[in-house]
Image (cartoon, rainbow, N blue to C red; front, side, top):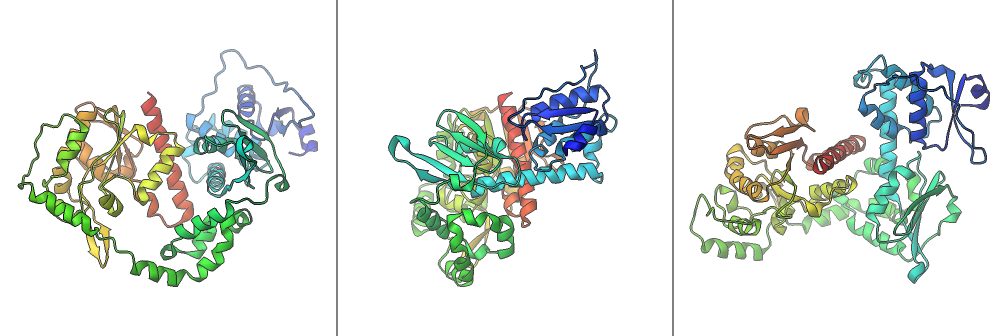
Length: 488
């Protein structure tokens, strides 16, 4: 709002910074409880050289402002948007909520759509910052630290800083942006004023490592140039050391893809088959294993010889659960995939990497939870040299439920998270509409709570980048809900 417009406002609110959400929230509450209309308020950010105090009317005795709790979460995200009118817009939305409590659910409303659009833009900017920040080392020994330059579209540095603290706790770093800077000295996080690009180092010895890494993870078989440029807009390229490789990699993608497919069999390695044959030769066929395991390690060993359903015949090995024997939370997926089948470990393939990254963002320690699957053998259809995932049927899920029940019996978790429909069916004994019941907690007859959500592989199957990002954010919110349930 311009100065001349501020002079016309009956009430002027001065915020400490562009991200002073607490100041906005307190002022908005006082104004709304005094029936101050949106058009009578001027919102302004206090210059650093001027410390003006707000003189707002006192809250009337016994006055209460009731708004949906979810509005605060939406508003806190949208507050980081760079739209200079956002303070007034959010107050107008709050003003309407007093008499339209269901406003957030009206998707056709212009203000609701605008709020959603602002949130998506902020979340996308947060995601881009996490993906495209590149640190450069300065100093040696005790003076070593890492500095990065990034140009966000919105005021996201403070909101995003905790992620980088978790991800790079062991090193001292600084992230410089035009809006603000974040500095971590190994013990304390400080948010400071913005900087200029010239304040950041130009390059260091790690540039070659970044290029080598990018060249090796580049998958020509999945290249879609338009989608890549949408996910990695060219505005970020000038700060990415690996960007210089992109034109050459795109030009040679077709040939590289053909070469990669030619040398990429996914059938089990010969030593797997030999070990498997030797193992089965020692064991007589049995529909049910011995039920005398007193620990997860003993149960895992017993599961190696499982023949409760025919899936064992084609799988490389049993893929049992992993994690602490006394985990408070157990995550249950559908079944192991191609990479899990070869490695013998759950959630190590593409979906597992998505799962790990989102758990990290949600501040859920993977090392403190137990991860398993409803079905312990890989079910697939061979297509040439590749093995394509095939959904287990109800009989296979039921046959393998014995192992899952024994895992839960030994671990005694406080909460189980059903990742997808197959996991929910195995845990609850019936088909569950995951999209409809997502985020809900169901209680079994034995008292065990089951949290319903999607399987992370669903995120990988979404093609549209914006939809993929939105679904990732929804799954992140689910994992944050799980964290809150863990704490409770």
